[in-house]
Length: 72
Image (cartoon, rainbow, N blue to C red; front, side, top):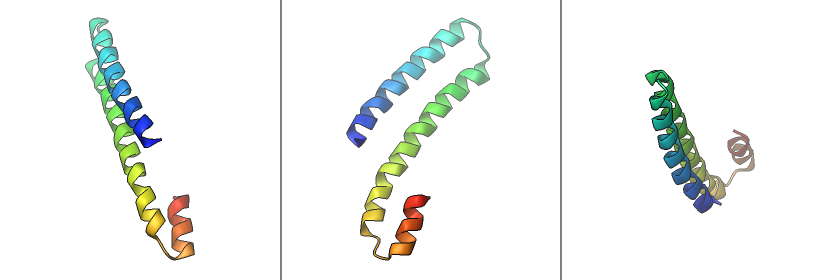
């Protein structure tokens, strides 16, 4: 699933860049355009972090801390 997510991230990055260019041609505020790019990069980073948490959860031994970790 994470491989599919990475493909989606690449598509998202390209679409965001294309959308930013289109908005710039319509004289939309630079700050709004920049926020669009920042939001997509934040989403990509959050998915990377989530992907690596599965490994940590797999190796946790104690049930209560593991349950709390997975809940969070």
